[in-house]
Amino acid sequence: MKCRNRAGFAGTRIAMTGLALAGLAFAVLSMNRDSESPAEATPEGAIFCVETSYASFCFAPGTDPAYVEEVIRRLPQPEMLSKNQFEIGARWSSTATDPTTGGSGDPVTLTWGLLPDGVSIPGTTAGDPTAPSDLQAVFDLRFPSPTVWRDKIRQSFSRWEGRIGATYVEVTYDDGAAFPGAFGSLGVRPDIRIGGHPIDGVGGVLAYNYFPIGGDMVIDTQDWPLFDNTGNDYRFFRNTVMHEHGHGLGLAHVNSNTGVLMEPFIQTSFNGPQDDDIRGGQRNYGDIYENNDVVLDATDLDLLGAIASPGFSLTQLSIDRGPDLDWYAFDASAGGLLSVTVDPVGSAYTIGPDGGPTSSIVTDEITDLEFSIYAPDGTTELINVAAAGLGANEVLADFFVGAGTHYIVVRRTAGTGNACQRYDMTVSFDISTDVAAGEVPAAPLDLTVAPNPFNPTTTIRFRAPSATEYEIGVYETTGRLVRTLRGHAAAAGAVAVTWNGRDDAGRAVGSGVYLLRTQAGGRTETQRATLIR
Ligand SMILES: [Ca+2]
Ligand SMILES: [Ca+2]
Ligand SMILES: [Ca+2]
Ligand SMILES: [Ca+2]
Ligand SMILES: [Zn+2]
Image (cartoon, rainbow, N blue to C red; front, side, top):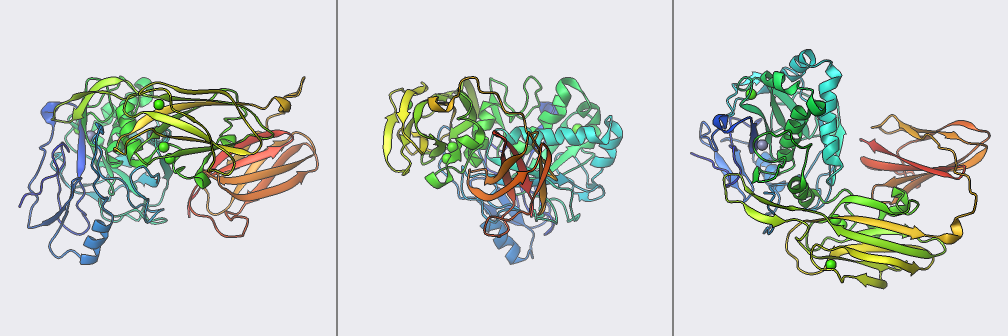
């Protein structure tokens, strides 16, 4: 019995020989077309499959029905796509930190870690026989130091994190459960397990990766003579890891006349995710400030330093679907002049599914954007800025707003179609009464947070410029204040303040990224820290 994935998922197959090998599609990154693996395979033994428009999930006879039900429960609901040239697939609907992650355009937190050497990696049509993972032993030996290649993997996840609504948390635990297909579980094993073993010698297949909600990565350890190329800070290795994780985010292969990461053959002429890759990632997980769809979840521009810095630019933003609203809050203090520019981001190229036809696309003209300014009540619209057409900047200059917290809301002008329009936003706010002549800049606080990640306690350290009151606000990334820590430094010098991972009501807060905004001696600095429960 054959089990075929949907067309367009090149190099994918399903193999299922037992409960431990939960059926998860995977995609292969190759050096050249000659060594491309077959687009389908015939798994051994009788199986049955659950088909979606995204992938096939196959189970061995006798599989525990509860396990089957769990896998089906985690499947995303298909959406009708338009202008989604990035070949989007299933997203992470469930992770170790979040039983349900919402829908398309909602952010996700993913734990990742290295598979312990010795855990068996099953053979696939990529050419690899079943063999234990030897990634750590081989790469520790072949790279200049064990730190080097681990750092390149860290940098690969960081680069994705800076572009889409995904937060990555490195973990060192892994219980050695059968690979692949064991779901992530906090304190047990990561969502994304990275292993490796011999596949097909130097060249050919470099690596393959399972689609969500699998996400595991297998690297051909025989390709170390390629991966240890130091050019452009190990770009060959980093682009391989970032490409594979693109599959792990739910992106399939594409073909394009411009270099993009998700083409099936590795390129080193660019660094990491490109426009089409970012559009795909943001369509699945939103932009880097999601969720900010309602006034209570507005992104805090003060916290980001946007208002204090004239002409502050925010990048890697998008309206990723028809109903997406991007709320931004800022404190107008006693009132002042606001200027905002919303600039659609993109370029012209051809793109299409791997093996299918390509078509021309102009990605700064996907959908027409507009924005409005709202009063502190969050419902009174003070002005709507929508004069510019498709692809053109919307500009508001020197608009007076009164006292209190105000809001900028960016949205699509019309249509509910499912498409991702990237944009940048520049904001400046002039509170003339706050600028004192001859003002001396405050000394830096040299704020640090350690340990990070932490559980459940971390320590915030800074340098008080003089005897001063200080205040540390602990915020969620949406800008919601969860805890305020106040104190008094008796003299200039080092200050250490411990946060116990609890909110102002004494409740333990959940896993995730927190912003620690520290004010002392007229200076404000912010650091991020990740709590892993
Ligand atoms: Ca190879
Ligand atoms: Ca958005
Ligand atoms: Ca939003
Ligand atoms: Ca417009
Ligand atoms: Zn690939």
